[in-house]
Length: 206
Image (cartoon, rainbow, N blue to C red):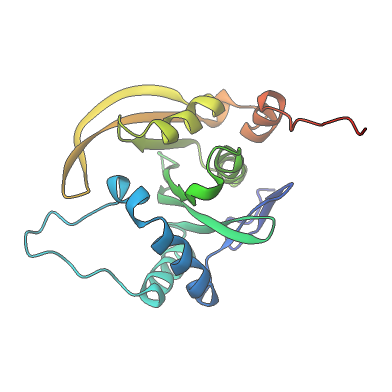
């Protein structure tokens, strides 16, 4: 029997994925404000010259909750040691003959490079595959080397360049597409990542 798609909380060690909540507003805003310049080159924007006002946090949560109830989106926050450090969304969920989705994510610069994001992506993808999805893709700007390292660490397959794929940071930007199917990771992404990720260094006591 497949696990329930949503709501769900997923954990591996210090890393937890859980549903985004209205009471996350203060912690979410603090991380976003502190990382505004670091995240700006990778943030979606509107192609409408008149622009669109950004939704309030409450409006964003309510929209994502509605999409989650309809089975179209899995909106997670990422916690490390109980602290909100990022966001991961499994979006564009389609069933029928496709059974696919895409994953997007961001993380607090203060904890980037510690293996948190590969763990989070592995948790989300394993859950999606176990719940019946067949294909997960991640689309990344070629210049976003940090994000590309995440998919490389997890063994995502490159599917090539998508020219002018998404409107990011004020213009239509090329993206590299990476994907995996459930058959390519029969043992799960998390198990593979656990086997290859660097172990924390230990220092002998004097």
